Length: 64
Image (cartoon, rainbow, N blue to C red; front, side, top):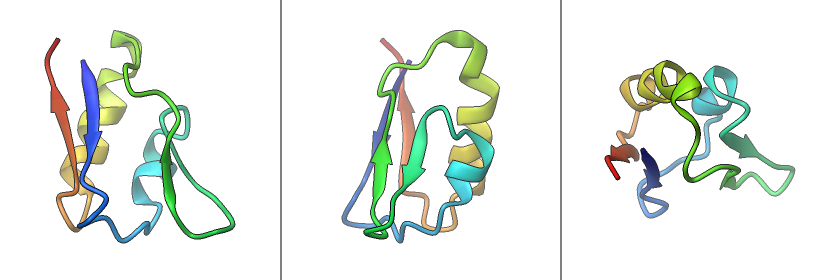
């Protein structure tokens, strides 16, 4: 799986970071960073929850 973030829509509210800190990080500059664009299957449920709970629907998953 590949995690895709639409940075034009993202508000960097850190909900995704709270769900999957292994994949998402909001830094001191208040911007979201994708730490792992291709996380392992063991993180799929967390990433899927982050996709569902993103208030701006800025995160998506593409299948490899």
